[in-house]
Length: 177
Length: 302
Ligand code: SF4
Ligand code: SF4
Image (cartoon, rainbow over all chains, first blue to last red; front, side, top):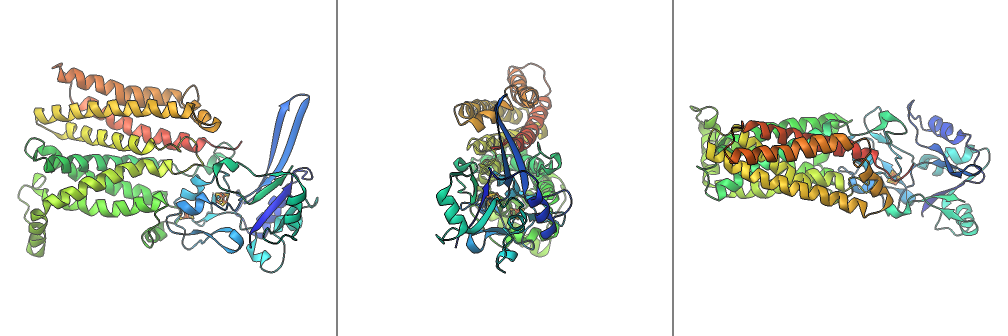
């Protein structure tokens, strides 16, 4: 099993519903977020191109945050997801500094927090909260090891990219372009 | 973590650079204490062997306190010592300190008479002291090795993060080691009452400063010949917001100027030896702070 998420940058309208859905679902403390929407503007007027990306932890296959964690609080879980055990985390911040995507934040309770791919929902057969909420249905979540899953199919048929592949993290968050 | 997007998300503040500075300082002090002892220079470099190591203990203890303050989950501190994770610099740094701290305390205890002349160990402590005195050579060897590891670690803690292009250079390990040794030598210059010993460490310090300058130039050459993100990282110091503080406070006031003063002093000009030494200490501290903050500003995205 290899969980991954794909997000269609052509369909995303930047409404930030995914951000609010995650904050609600996961009780994210006020002032923080596990996912966020980026608006990237390229080119010179009038030839401008805008890309909207809903970003979050990429659940990297080669995760620097897991490697640098001194206690093993940051670890690999089911389907390659990267999770934090709050009771093992000392809040040293090494993983926050090590993440090229700035996907982690210090939780006011002292541990570090980040996207979990909503594993608690996935285990019940539900989609992650952001995916389930998206009004344009531009997100896909599933198992890459299953060639018939939505995500395997969409990645086969569409052009996609990942963020900073040159960081060597092998991110599992795909952007359809 | 992205201080540009959201300033309060910068994760490492003053605690980590202070911890790294004090770690480097302790490494430098212990290194020279052990080396002078092993080379049979105990009399010639008596301050370095017998007095300065007390300050290494203080530096380590304050450093550990700073590290503790950095943790968001302070009560879980002990979890650092439930596993050894070789891939995590934080982890082996914590274990290195676990090795260095008792060595420094033993060494300091063996020379306690330099602070309390009439101190006498009693009972079992006396036997313990006798045991350590007999094996002082081995303790010195252990101290020599572990202080080098500690010194390198203060740099590796940063350079292991490829997420921060400014930190992601293996030069930081040797640079912080040499800087730590230089601050250790500076401590010896400040504390020594013996002119010959001061001159010895001034000479050593000049050499170390030369190596540091070489490493800094090398670091920037490496950045400029690297990928765009590292070129951008170097630009923080070459025209960017850290240009003035880095070149004036670290390179100018913290390296070149004290080196000139030390050379002049060796040439018999009347310069209080403590002035260049204090400048070296401030320079070393600033180096850690600037690299810590600028590194958190250097990034791949946005
Ligand atoms: S995106 Fe960041 S937090 Fe997520 S797995 Fe990769 S390095 Fe770790
Ligand atoms: S903050 Fe917590 S999860 Fe992150 S590296 Fe430190 S102990 Fe591990």
